[in-house]
Image (cartoon, rainbow over all chains, first blue to last red; front, side, top):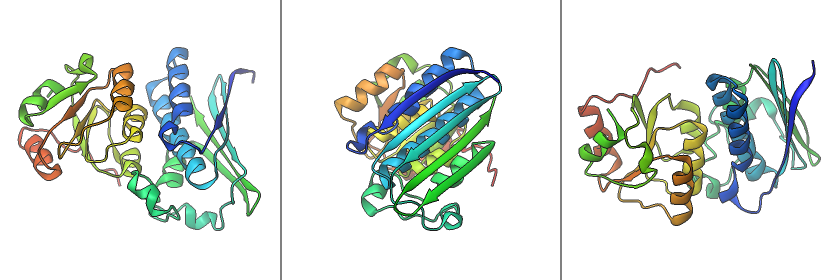
Length: 140
Length: 117
C-alpha cells in the first residue's frame, strides 16, 4: 500500500508549554485531508498523550506519522530511560510522573491505557537506559 | 444549551474565542486533571476547570471541546487567549467555585454524558 503522506516532528522537552504542537499540526493536516472526525479524534488523543509522555519521561523525542489509504501509523521514538515494567505502566492509575507534572494536570496514570484505547494496534519496544519506541495504528 | 446560555447561568465573562459563543453544548466535564479529560470527555462537551496553563487549551483542542469554563476566577494569560482565539475556542471565566458551577449547569439541564466504563 502506497503511503499518501509522511510527517516528521521533533519533540523538545525544554518547554512544557509547547507540548502538543506536533499533535495540533497533525490534527489540522488530517482535517484538510478529509479524514473522518472519529479517526482524527483517536489520532489526536493518542498522539498528544504520547507527546506529553515523551516530555515528562524521556527528554523529548521524534514522531513519525504515516498516512496511508487505510490507516494512520504513529511512531514515537525516544532515547529516554526506558519503561521498567510495561505491564504495570499499562495499568490505569499507575504513574511514575513527578508531583510537578501532576500540578500541570498530567501524570494520572491514564496515558498509556488511553493511547491503547484510541488505537487499533499498539506496540511498545523499550530498553532500560536506551529508550522507548511506541507504534500505534489507527484504521481509517 | 449554547455557550451564550452558560454565560448567563454562571454570571461568566467571555474573554476569548467569541466567534464560538453560539456553539451548541451537549455535555460537560469538570476536572483539574487533563489526563482524565483526555480519557473521559465526550463529544460537544464543555470543560470546567480550575487549572490554568496552555496545556488546558491544547487538551481542549485535541478533544474538540466546545468551550472552556475557568472556575474560581482563574484568568488565562495572553498566550492562552491568543491560542484560543486562533482556534475559535470560547474561553469563559466565572467566579463560581467548581462545585457550584457544575451544580448550576446541571440544574439547567446539562449532563455529564454516558458512563462507558
